[in-house]
Image: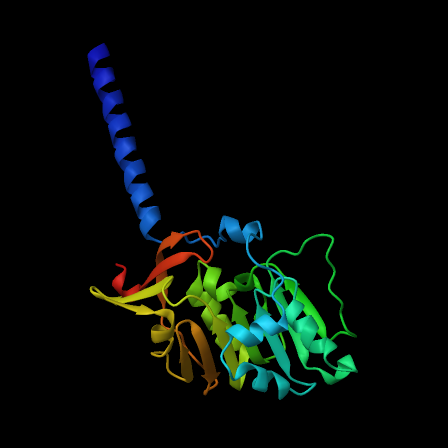
Length: 250
């Protein structure tokens, strides 16, 4: 009888090990349903003080012209704004802050000692993850920027992109600066697209640029981003990410 119990106990251990191994493999392949951010994002281990001059240098050449055309009743949203230095520089360029467009900076976490100026309500900082922000209640955006921000670091790129396009006005513009090779979307067994090439397949937007310097113009009201899921994430600056179209996962 004792030998029987030892045998059963061994089987339980073996089965538990197989189950744990399978679970680990599954976790490495498919995105956990619960929302998460990388450790680098939680610790703010990236540049948070980019100014407007740097934005001008790295974003698409149309950016500064589009920014200069914003009217006081329009809205600029900066994803991953850090300390919002670029937006502060922009508002300071006006002798009267009320002449500037409304500016909203998205920052996952601000240093506790840092309090950006509000410029009579022209600048707002939305602290926390963009994916969980109630963007449906925000003023529609005419200009959106992302310099190694949410779009470069998020686990849930699909949700982030969909929220951005839902937030934008028709004819609004999205300017992205990221690496051209850290993000890939598998659309077939042997075919992968860069972020820019994937965006070019989305109906209702016009995509320009190259090598991670991207300009997107929203052309219709309801832009739908095809569903895709994360299958690999390497936490780096920026992270390396591989996604796959959802209809190819199962």
